[in-house]
Image (cartoon, rainbow, N blue to C red; front, side, top):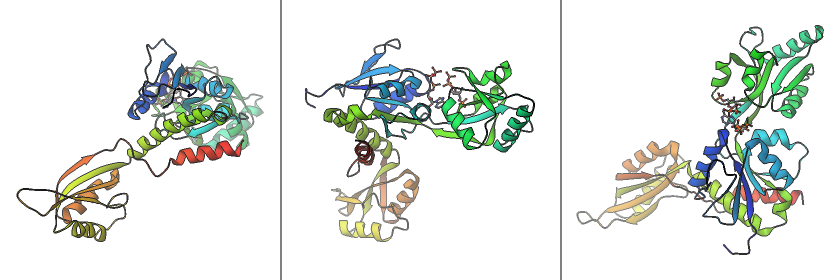
Length: 342
Ligand SMILES: Nc1ncnc2c1ncn2[C@@H]1O[C@H](COP(=O)(O)OP(=O)(O)OP(=O)(O)O)[C@@H](O)[C@H]1O
Ligand SMILES: O=P(O)(O)OC[C@H]1O[C@H](OP(=O)(O)OP(=O)(O)O)[C@H](O)[C@@H]1O
């Protein structure tokens, strides 16, 4: 890193469902975040001193990125979709950070036994209309909810803006139903609400976003974005794989390698490219070779058995922290998006 790099301002969730998982992801990627205290809104990433961290509510991070008071931010994809309409200055740099998974859904009181699907709900809005009423939906996602319902040709409703404890709105009487995010479904159940078939508006998880203009205009900021993206991508990619090292008996490295490659019943069983083989200098026996293969997690036992058939034993399994490809796929896609709009 050089000293002339401009600081990159990165907004991270200060609390709520994304706070800890964001911190854990960045730590796992060698970018541990230092926050002096829960009450402080500025922090740093000691391993990347060119980054200044700003802690914000997930819901506010989109706006901070959009207005350019920060360059990058991590927030929920639901927030990006809700706030994003008409804001072309924000680019989604990585849309699947693997946590903060939730769905934006419509939920109605359990007592509405006749309403179990979106079609039933559409009929209900017509019944409300006949009585001169509108179905009241409490939500903090007015744009997504309105657009989605309009697309389904459901128009007789009104939105009630609620910022917290959404699930209490129907029982307290200030809305008839809600549109909110759910993950385990516990909060809905405990508030005697139920989802309806066909009533999922959006699937969301945490994502990395950036201000297009600020990143386009500053190669050093782009460089830092690339570093963050590369580390995250390689770390998330690594979760799919395990590395197996086994001692395999054989006359030569070629014999062991050929056996493993030619007797593999499944593709991917002998590693990303093929086994790496090295001679084991054993006192007792000359004919041992150390074989290392990196396979997908779900192939672990199949690969162990394949190595056993080849004469393998002493197998040790490790999980890689990072798996890098020949280039960062996300970074290439991100660069193309930047170019498209420049
Ligand atoms: N139960 C959940 N499980 C996983 N992710 C969730 C869950 N609830 C919300 N999220 C994700 O976390 C983001 C932040 O929501 P959360 O309610 O934690 O924010 P907050 O900052 O505590 O709330 P508030 O806006 O009420 O101050 C949401 O936009 C969504 O992407
Ligand atoms: O399906 P579940 O696993 O029960 O999760 C759903 C709850 O999670 C979110 O709230 P959160 O706990 O983040 O707090 P909030 O009410 O402050 O938004 C959301 O608003 C729901 O209330």
